[in-house]
Image (tube, rainbow over all chains, first blue to last red):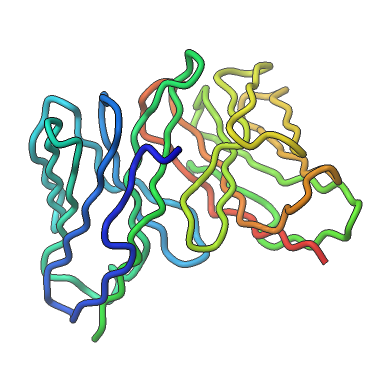
Length: 113
Length: 113
């Protein structure tokens, strides 16, 4: 079963606007990670937020975590065409004694020039 | 130049053929992973290895096999028993098998003819 679910599945905005993506998860977590995937490429790690953190920034990225609601959001400010990609949240989920990283289905972000 | 590499980038397989996908890392990471990604979907775990000479089945291991004879190498064989192997395959590594960030290779796109 999916541990992380992103919302919306697809998002299209104009260059310069802000983009917000949301992620919900089901069980308690140690941390939550966001990754980016350009079309046909591997995933690139963007940011990791620990369960005792509420907000984290990295350049134009801002991630929030609400453990009471089991949700996280990724905000990309002042979007650029190069931000066009799919964005995935991922959390570690214990399965049969092992910690496995489980990904949502992703949000496909398109930045229009 | 450190990183994780996968080869080939594109691979075509005939029905009934076994094929092997290569994954190499020079990051000195203990943990390595293989994921499968289908169009518009998230990643699903095929196999993982916590340390050299050890590996475990993930969520969708049927029809796949791996080996971990060297720390830097984790090849994946897609056997003829895998009924629907056409997909994008991603290899990843992490410093330890825990809740670390994972680093991904560029992927191999496998198509069955």
